[in-house]
Structure formats: structure tokens, C-alpha cells
Image (tube, one colour):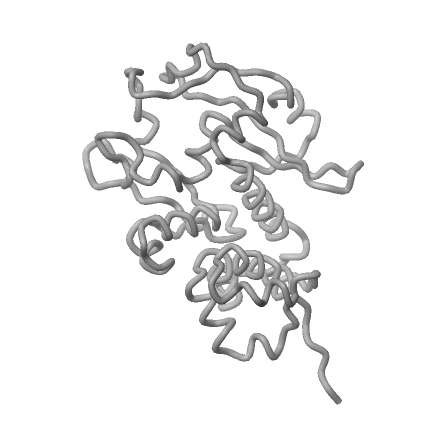
Length: 264
């Protein structure tokens, strides 16, 4: 899924799929374009994508990041992005593409999972909340749009088991918006603080070591129900990581984590 920052709700509503609007799409091996969308991609991974993929492959976060990704800082330079490396072949295929299709299909990234729907995020000032919007954007070569199957957004998300993916990516997109706000003025993503934040978002194995072996739990009060899960549950640890980034970089405590009060 591609998350884009949308400044104008009117613009978003003009182009987005409405909740009950139906679109036609079905992808299957009988289409001549099957797997063409899995080539020469600029596919950016979200933190939850990496959790699912590294678990599927049975490797650590560090191993996955080293072998399968490039860490990039785009021109706007607000925070690091993690981009999937393409295979070193003529077609620059996805490294997980096989002759039979996707080799990590149950844990495929959200961009692939929700294709050909892309998502955006804008802040609704009237509701004082972020809203997720969806766009139907198949590539020109896609023949799946001529299939008879039709979907609403909610039906498509349920069919592709994307509901939880969307929720986690939405939380990450909200956090990323802080890096583009006045709160992040002077922040350098290549600083030690920036690298710590990257670890807390993308490298659960290293972040777990940091939380459990440093003075972290002496300095921060972590919600008991969350603390009980972080030794073995990467999703809970990611929730802690995102909450800690808000506190560590932006001074925003939450129900999940807050500074311990110094004992006088």
C-alpha cells in the first residue's frame, strides 16, 4: 500500500472510492498479465510488513533488512524508508516471486495485499482525526479489471485479510506525519536519535534486546498488559516502539508508555 499525505479533503473525496462504491477486479493465473505487477517495483515496506515477512522466512529482523531491503532517505528527508530489493535478474522481479506466484503469499506486504487499491491519509480538522481514503489505481496493463467479480472496499479488505494490515499501517502513517510537523523541527533522521527510532519501528529483535537488557524499563512505565507480551509478541513490541517514538522524539506520553517519576 502506498500511503500519501493529502492536504485537501475535497481533493481526496473527488478521486477516492466511496465506501459502498463497487469496482471490478480479480487476479488469477489465467490472465496473461499474471505476475507482471511483481517486477521492477519501488515497493516500500511498513514496519508490520517486516514482522510478517521475517516470520514467514524464519529469520531475524536484522537478517531480513540486510538481505532483502535498501534503507533510503527520500529528498524530503523526514525519516528513513525501507524499500524491498528486487532480484538481480533482467526483469528485476520481486525476490519472492516464483513460477507459481508469490512465495510469501500469506504474509505478502500490504501494497501487494490491497492491489490495485492504494490508500491515502489526511487530517480531518472538523473531526480532529485522521481519515483513511482509498483509490482504485490498476496499471494500464492489468486485465483483472475486466473480470466479473466486484467489490466494495470493505469486501476487498476482508477478502484479502487486509483489515489488520490497514490498521497497523494507518497508525504508522499517523506517526510519520509527526516527522513532517513543527514538532520535528531540527530533527535529523541520521542522528543517534533517528537511528534509535528506526530500530524501534523496523527491527523488533534489536528493539527487544534494547528494552529488556538496558535501563529502559527502569526509565519508562509501560502499560502492564503490554509489558507482559513484549518478550515474545512482535506486534505488541511494535505498538510499544511506536508509542516510545512519540514520547522519545516528540514528548507525547500515552497509555502505553510514560516516563517514570524520579524518586526524591
